[in-house]
Image (cartoon, rainbow, N blue to C red; front, top):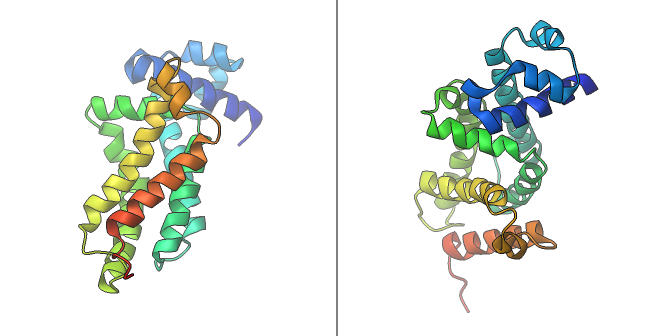
Length: 204
């Protein structure tokens, strides 16, 4: 992606996060990206295509990143714990406004979730993690938990953590939750909760 494309994408994410798809304006995106509006239309054809490009780019990027951590369909719990930590780190580095766009998508009925996010991210990652959780249950490496709910609760914790980072900014709670080394602390705490919750009790 060129520097100009990056400027457009960043400006567009801020615009869609602030005003939603309907309220977003291409002229403001062009102004904030410091590019000609005609150039944006040349590359993306329309506001909808630009919006779709953002969702497709980020969801495919997250999926591709996850596949670098678990390259095949066979992973043990240690690899899944590693994935949780790396995914938290990856999402923490995304433009925060991207999560505001996701919130708007869910609140607005999820048209683009079904069109881009589900096929590009949710479905393949669900399949990958559910397959491995089921395998770990069969091997008795974890308790007979409900695999899909377990997956939802893990991913939900990761997503909500990033959403709270936006909502609590400027409050005393933000300073408590997102202080020095907050990402490492949250990662270690989440993995500890999962381990104690789903791994068999160790015999003394």
